[in-house]
Image (cartoon, rainbow, N blue to C red; front, side):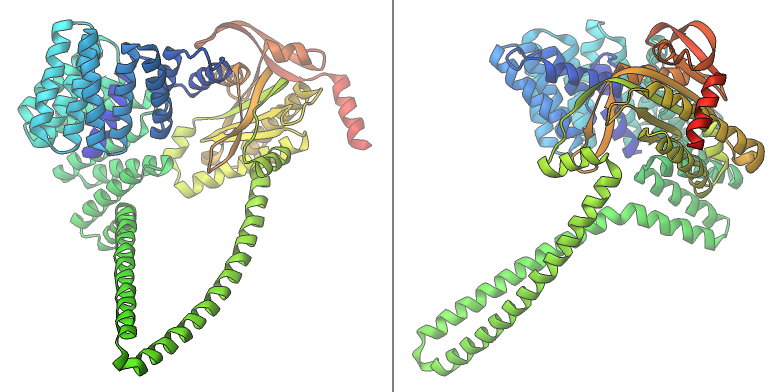
Length: 614
């Protein structure tokens, strides 16, 4: 329960405070591109604030928040000074430094009062309540939640913000067991979120209403609430909350004695948590399954799931315990060494025990010599290991990144982003992947996806394309990076046709019906920016409007079809046969002309056959 509460505090309220700015990675990348290409002597405070508000990593938020605070202070702009303090409060809250978080939130409140900004004042008061809630200080959390709610009710500026405040207050009352107050606040929050069409808030409100009703014994209402929340979250890909709510449903059926339903919901939670790497939910799902099988007297399965629960829940605690023991041992050894030095000094000052001092000195010399010998051996072995690891790292880097990019990274420690004016980008997506992921075991699912993607790799290598990345069941590649390619559009079209043929033939001849996919493909051509992202786990990636449109082409395609934009069509219209789809509406892009690829023209087939014979 506290895990979900922390998640809601970190996500829902940030979205409300930013007032709806979409945390779309592409949009964020575009903002950063504008920021870094803008002259440094002309800082745009709103742009810096938007980037800081929508960064996911605390260190990145801290970087832009401190920059915003510095520039706003230089300009004496109290509005952005207040916003910078609020963002820094978010940073330290996410890092668990609640004292620092409160310091910045209180400064944010002071500036909001100075500016007479009711909405900002309310938000900061509610965030203070969030911090006290996370810290277990229910009394103070209640004070600041109610203060923020009162300000929002009086101002009437933002119903969405009021809904968020009511939700967090209700969540705190649920945590301390005041179910009546929890139900009151959460019901009002759900109504407000529904009125303002804020699906994420409505989903989490319904989820908490399910928990409250379950604790009140209203099982039917609880199940209805939680299922409604899961349906809403599936449309928004809120997988972590879905995993949590599925555990709550499992609790309900377990209490009713319906073992099969309880196992079904807990198993679904485990699959989702493993797929997305949510370790806390993996631990919770394993614990729930262990409890269910334990009640059913299935000791073998109960023990197996409990062992997995221990593995995921205690790993971080074990690391901390080992580190603490190491620190204690180091302190002890240092104190012991100091005692030996003091004793030796005392012996040297005492002429009556010269003989003992000489013996001690000889022993120390022998130990020192032995220590030096072992140290030299250790250094030699370490250097050999370092050299092997260096060679291994360079080899791995060459496998991960294009050779030119990898060499630049090894030589300079960074990679300069480059613009390519003529590139074609391809996206694929498997139809019905979510259905398959629920019906197959994790091992079977990974094996099946690997079977397809391995063949895709061979096809794009054959045509000289560059694989960019895979995200779940989506495969992305490009022609024209990292080296320019004159016939990039033609090559990527040929690769797309071969990928489509492979998927069709696999379904018709080679696969069992329940483990085969159907595919959609989308292609667009134009300029992109390419470079390396990450400081520890490097990845070669491309950005730009061309990439966004290619993704839209895939989502607008049909099963078993290749959908291309007008940009690509102009480059290859003489070499292939097309079906003009006309102008279609594209999400967030307006109207765009698209074409389905029907095949290769006759002369193209003869040309390809000639190339193969030579």
